[in-house]
Length: 77
Image (cartoon, rainbow, N blue to C red):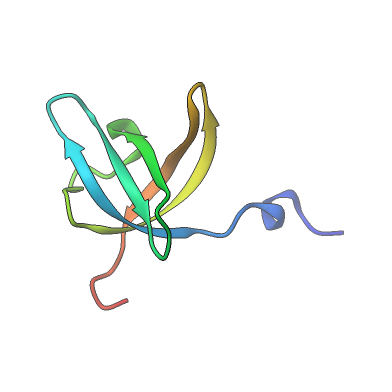
């Protein structure tokens, strides 16, 4: 039987469309889609900035799906 971790959603790729470091949140646009996801700075690396390509997972929040476990993607990807 597969382990529970194996059933997780695959990592998604996106681009940071907006980030406000003062307010501590931003939005990531999913690659190949018009979908955008909210993220809080607590779920992102400190080096994140607008225009970064990132990988992330989704988690249901109070107001919809949120980007979590965000990592800045290697520029060579």
